[in-house]
Figure 1 (cartoon, rainbow, N blue to C red):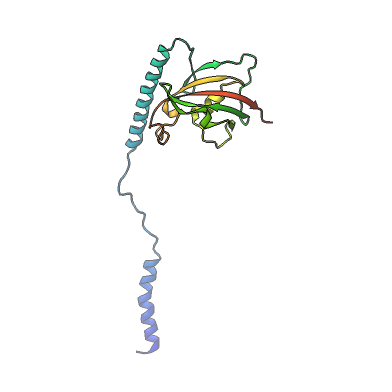
Figure 2 (cartoon, rainbow, N blue to C red):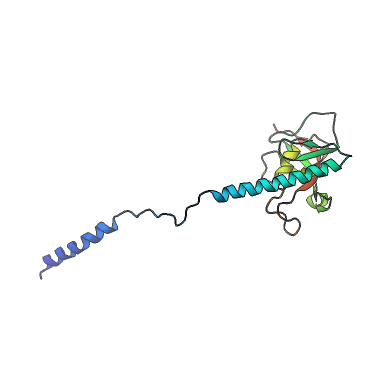
Length: 186
């Protein structure tokens, strides 16, 4: 065999490999399809938890004759410990607020004290601070100098995660917040 034939044989054998290697990969199909039932079951479970917590909180409110509760449009209840009637100013987007708060279970047992939490500074709806949604939303209902107690279903509090070694999963809580100051943003 001469060199020319060897080159020709080489290209003849190489050509099919080049064709095969240029083929685009086939799409991989999922091994299992999800029909969305997991999401529906999860939503149903969460609704059931909320309904049970709501019923429990409403029973507590009915037993409490000393406080006048308000149902918020955000899915929690609250009452005023100390009310400010001299101003109508509540915090707005970007305002810097200073406040103290505690977290208790609905029986009144302290989970996180005001002292543990310390004085908090929060830029309304702009801070990445790890505040539960019930506190973030509750602060926006308050005026400077007020103290308000909020009853929060678990989805407005610590939800599924709870607080390690302090609060289990899906437990409603109460939080008493004192709004010390509102510094308006420009």
